[in-house]
Length: 154
Image (cartoon, rainbow, N blue to C red; front, side, top):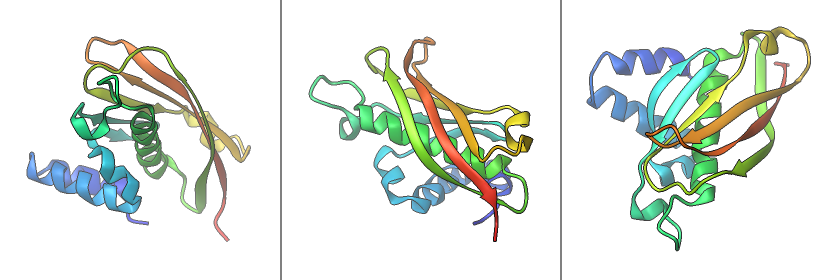
């Protein structure tokens, strides 16, 4: 797996083009990410943010951003966070997701994933990542937890 944090920082040195190339490359890691066209706005240890633009391809019959598109955005943010945070010699895999839909996603949604440093050093392989999606005005439209299984590499 490439060093996602280093690639993100390098890409950021080339405004617009570099970040768009990073977004495209990240989408290829799990091809279903390409369906939401993620636009990363922040990746650092313990926090990642990705924007899903509201466009026809990700809307439902109500004209709001579809629930599964939101979940894909949350998972993309979580994956970037995990890659930017995981200690050397460890690996992760998602093992579950619990989310609550709190409001209609009527515009672009920023998906945010967060952890605390102590979670990665506790020794417990079950690591919950807090996730939420919010509109530009701060309205939280989705929130939940993605559980990771973190173990030593063989």
